[in-house]
Length: 309
Length: 283
Image 1 (cartoon, rainbow over the protein chains, first blue to last red):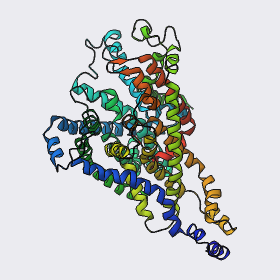
Image 2: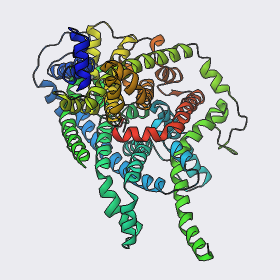
Image 3: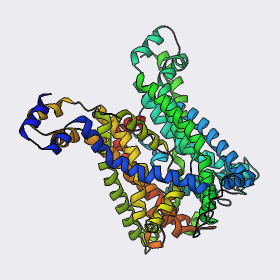
Image 4: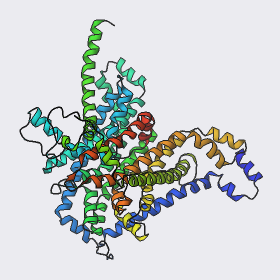
């Protein structure tokens, strides 16, 4: 390269200039701040968490090694088995609903209509708005005595004789929590699916229409297979976020009633901060790890496949 | 257009607009209800007689209550400064790393890209317990610096991922031309490629700022004392607790906080969409 020979000849002996010029040295130099930071603040904490999960560490007390005792304790407690079941139900239901809702929303927004730009921005609102405050609105909508939904269904329309126990009964509380998660996540799915749908070449769509396929067939046989890589990645990323969700259960139900809505992160939070059992709390987060590894590997594989397309 | 085709158009358009209206209603009604509730006086909030979907005596009373909380501007300042500092740190580090991964050929570049993606997938709730212990060991637990050193753990992977995708699509030729004209590599990058990448960098900055602003778990676990709270956490603590909820001011806060993002994203939706198809955040 002519530029590189010029640098070398003009700045004789300037090793720094040469280091900042060549890909092989500039690359690691530019990467190092980020990777040093992530090594100190992510890799080190990860091994620290593994270590803590094998100790009886309490707040304000030194840790001593107890082997697998925390894990054995978790397996025997009702709280942990509830956490696992809750997390599975929450993640799978929310994902399925967001996936279907997102596809429908994406297909819907793909059709031109009046006010599309405004509609797209407004429909994103549940996703971009601070979760803390959107969840406060939902707490108000789910209010035990002054819920707008119950007011309309029971007193105004007379469709129900009893108010719905949104956050009071165990299965209702889980359903209400899932609903808010879906409400918040559907715009994200819809908008990313929309972008993928719009990336499919119109010629292929047109060709299949000329061949006599109806819009439904065109969507499932042509569009859907072509957007599948994006669909899979978005779903996997969302699965991880949903499985590890803290904000919604913490703000809406505090894990109640009777631990019916506590998830991994909230259980870890409750054990380590409220009860001071840091080792036990760390063990709870570590139990997420195998699932996370599987999801991360799946994401990497589908990402690679997407880059090859 | 003849009458039958017009009839057919209407026939398919009506269910479409009905479905659209239904979706819009579910997605947006909570904001409307929050907004209307924020305009009501305390008594009226719990009163469903008459036209409860509208405020009988609309008032900004709840907003006044919110803003006149003695700590409000302190918390606001905490949120602004923590979000701004973490955004600047994260974006600068991520521009460097993202550029290296996307544009430079060196041993380990592909591996670095994969590692960034893995750290980006790691949920931020996964490591909060050891992070709290580390902050305590370093004497940072309790104050705002605890947030400044931990927020980049989720911002850097995300921004690097987003920016490496962006840099990969910025043409290389202008940078090479500048070097042929005698500019050093670094000044060619800074003067040519970075300005060309400004839209991507701004997108990363907006994401970082809003992600810091909205973060909850770290801000309630790593920080002590009322004066150190971030705005969201401060408002929640001041106007709710146990079974006590002061709905008026809470709904006012919800309304106020959704306005700036709604306006921002109205102008940014398209860039935002192309940004999140290469990366994504909350589920």
